[in-house]
Image (cartoon, rainbow, N blue to C red):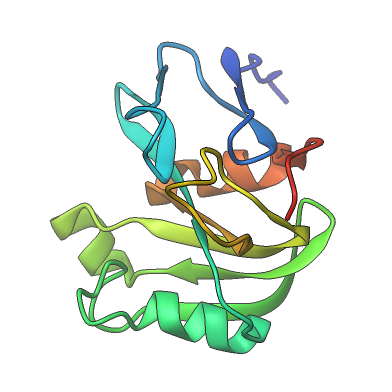
Length: 157
């Protein structure tokens, strides 16, 4: 059996979202500015975006709200897998149908909870803590991000 070559990666650390993970080499970290509520990384063949959701919801409610948002970010009929382990926490995995993902470049998603809730700075813009980490990633890189995702110390409310 031929040996597999290790895939070169870049380690991304998000202080704002309190997580770290690996992406393919050649991707660049993107932070839209201090007041933004999203950031991520992108490069040849893919991307990952981090954001957060607030509100006292259950895991099922948070996953359903994200998967079936009126803008259909994961396509018209996404598959939602509940109670998957995401960075040691229970969460969900959202995947578009294969045809939609290939044809329309629709992302996959991971959602897990913050414990304790995350407070995104600056406080004057974001008045409340966020309960849920939401990761949107192109489907071919979902497993890599999910497998390497770790929580770091972060600001909590």
